[in-house]
Picture 1 (cartoon, one colour):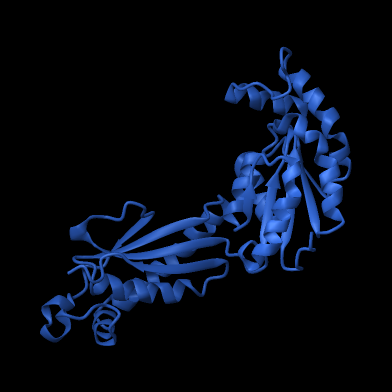
Picture 2 (cartoon, rainbow, N blue to C red):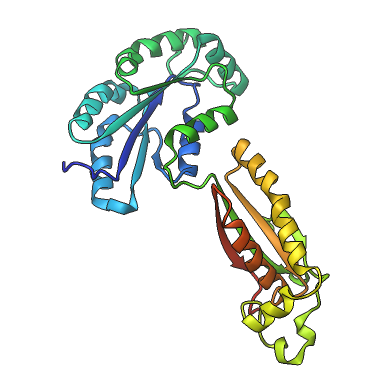
Length: 291
C-alpha cells in the first residue's frame, strides 16, 4: 500500500462499549471526517488504501473498531501496527469507569456485547482484557466518565478540528411568505416592512440580485439599521450555538413573494455574517424566479 499523503489524516476510534464511540463518530462527521462505524479490523488497510487513491476527496478518514466485531476483532492490534508502518495514524481510545458504563447500559436497556449469560460487569471485565494492549498503545485516551454527550462532542471538536474548520455553518435562505415558511428554518426575519419593488414598474420584472433593486431595497428607510442590528443580535446566538455544539443553522429572510426584498436583504446579511470568526455562511434563494 502506498503511504497516505501528508494532507490526509487517519484516525482509529476504539475503546470501551458505552464510552461514547457513537457520539465521537457523529462529532467527527460534523467536522467533515469520513467515518466508517463498526469496521472489521481486516478492512482497515483497504480503507486507508482507498483514502489514498481518493486523494482530496477523502482528506480525513476515521474508522470505529470495537468488540462488536467478535472474533474478527482479535486482529485489531496487528492491523494497527501494520498501518503505523505506512501512514501517519492516530488511535483514539475512549474509556470510562465501570460504574458509569453499567449505568449507561442500564439507561439504554441493552446488554453488553460480551456479557453473554452474565452481567454487564462480566462483559466489561472481558472487554478490558481484550482492549488492554490497544489501550496501552493508543495515542489519545479520553475518560468520558464525567462527560455528557455535549461535553464529549466539544472535546472532540477541540482536538480534531482543522485550523480552517468553521465552528458553525449558517445558511441564509430568502423566501416568500405566500409560499410558506421554510421547514428547516431555525430563525425567521420578516422584511415586508420595506417598500416593495414589485410596485415600481421598472423594477417589477427584476429580482433582488439586480443592483438597481438592491439599491432600492437597501436604501429604504430602516433597511440598513435592520440588517446591522439583526447581525449584532445574532452574534451571541451563534456563540451559544457553538457552546452547545449546534453546528448548523438556517436563517430565513422573508418577504411577500421571495423575489425582491428578501433576496436583497439576505445578500446584505450574508456579507456581514461572513466576516464573523468561526462562522461559514452560504446563501440560498428558495423562491427567486418562481414568479
